[in-house]
Image 1 (tube, one colour):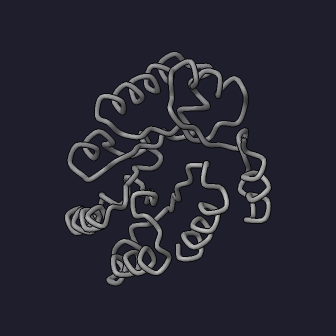
Image 2 (cartoon, one colour):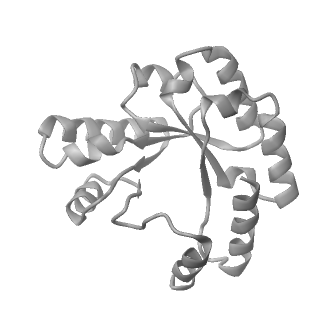
Image 3 (spheres, one colour):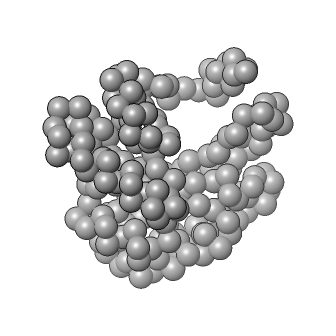
Length: 185
């Protein structure tokens, strides 16, 4: 997280017209680490990274065991100004129960819905419902797992505000990402 924040700060100065944010996946084990909150705070302070540009992604499984201690940690993370996303939304046991009880700013539609929405009308309706709910609740919504132009086209038609997947970009080392950033108008 420290290196990523430091690198993004550098790119922010080199490419000020590009709106960059950092998403970091965090496991329940990492959240329960006693120094997690202090570590996040130290990283933000030492890198001068704006807390609101950091989005920590957690999966619903973190709430299955000891949900209250996890909620307290997440609330403290949010007090730092860091945003929280529920990753792989829709794949857990009771996804809807989490979004109104826990401090969530964003939801990420699981890739399984994105792939099935092209051939299954029920799944398409689920994706539409998640997008509608996200808009109504003021959440950032991202569709995960975009692998072909038809999926991207459908999501644009559904007014999905954000997408990620191999069609858009594969994971890449910083040197390649710099080339991508430099090519932006």
